[in-house]
Image (cartoon, rainbow, N blue to C red; front, side, top):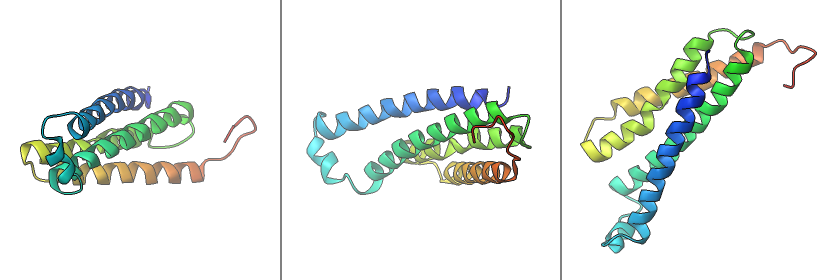
Length: 139
């Protein structure tokens, strides 16, 4: 069923990035050398780590919402499979940020993920704009 994978991946991804947020809290408030972490909090790897955390949770939430909508409207809007895959591919963005921070990877995955998620959201928005509202809809 199209959308189910977005729901599953969205919740799992959100759980992982929530846990990553706890790591960031630990590093800022409790870890040895926390003063150094705080001093560099708004620049470089520290800032990018927080960007990954925020975008990971945002893109997870978007996958949950997109998945829910695709499950409920999959027979009434077109290109649901493509929209689903684009939203899932979008999760490469926060993973790409983490790959940059921890592995020194180039920003290719960040760009691919950002473009995919943006395309999925716009495409779904157009699909709902074209949707004919029926009597039993709660839209």
